[in-house]
Length: 259
Ligand code: NDP
Ligand code: 8X3
Image (cartoon, rainbow, N blue to C red; front, side, top):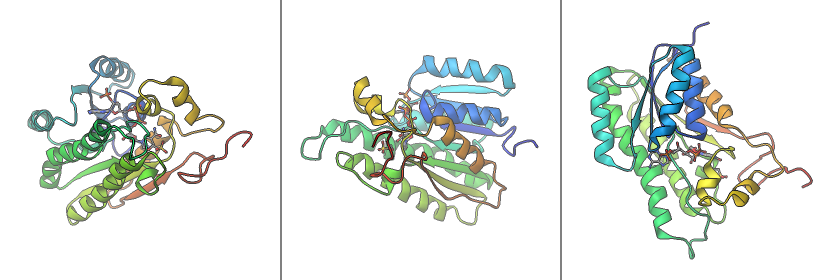
C-alpha cells in the first residue's frame, strides 16, 4: 500500500545527524519529498544526494541555524512562495550542552540549549504554521524527550527546554483545534546518536559510557515512530508518544549488562 505521505513535502530540522537524518531517510522511503535544514552544509548535501537518487524523491537543503530568527523567517518565506507550506514539519534540531550542576554550569551552555531547543523550535513553527492553518492541513511533529517528564542531576536546563517543548506541543495542538492541522510530540529515551558527543564537547569516552551495557534506541527506531505518526489517517492525531529502548524504564532506570 502506498504510504499516505507519498508525494507530500516534509521539512526536517536538524537533518545532518542522528534522529533527524534517520527521519529524512525514513520519510524518503515513504515517498515524501524533503527539505532538510541544519547548519552543516556538507553533511546535508551528502545526505540529499544519497536519498534523492534511489527513491526518485526530490530533496532540497537549507543551511539554517534555527536560532537565527531572520534567517528562519526568510528561508521559510522563500519555500512557501515557491512550493507552499510543507505538509509535514518535523521540529527535531536540538542539543544538550554540558551536564554540570546548576551551581557549576556554564551560562553560555544554558543559552545555547534554550535558544535552540525552545526559541528555535518556536521560530520555525511560527514561520510555517500560519500557512498550514490557512491551507487547513498539515502535520507538526515536535521531538521532545523523556527529560520533558523527568529530570536528573545535571540536566535541569536541558530538561527545562524539553518540558517547554511538551507545553508548546500541547498548547499548539489546542490552538489549531478546528483546523486540519495536527500537532504531535514524540519523546524518546536514550538514542545512540551524536547527542552525547555534542553534550560532552567531543569527549568520546564520556559519550560512549552513556550507552555502555545497554541497547539504546537508534535514530531509525525513532524515525519509524515518526513515520507511523505522519502516516496515520487524517482524523487520527498521535498527540503524545513516549518511546524507550527495551532496557530503559525511566530517565532513572536502566538495565545494563552485568548491572
Ligand atoms: P545529534 O547531535 O545527532 O543531532 C542534532 C541535530 O540538530 C543535528 O543535525 C544538528 O545539525 C542540529 N542542530 C543543532 N543545533 C542546531 C541549530 N542551532 N540550528 C539548526 N540545526 C541544529 O542529536 P540527536 O539526533 O540525538 O538529537 C535530535 C533531537 O532529539 C534533539 O532535539 C534532542 O534533544 C532530541 N532527543 C535526543 C535523544 C538522545 O538520546 N539522542 C533523546 C531524546 C530526545 P548541525 O550541527 O549541522 O546544525
Ligand atoms: C536525551 C535523553 O536521557 O540523555 O533527551 O537526557 S537523555
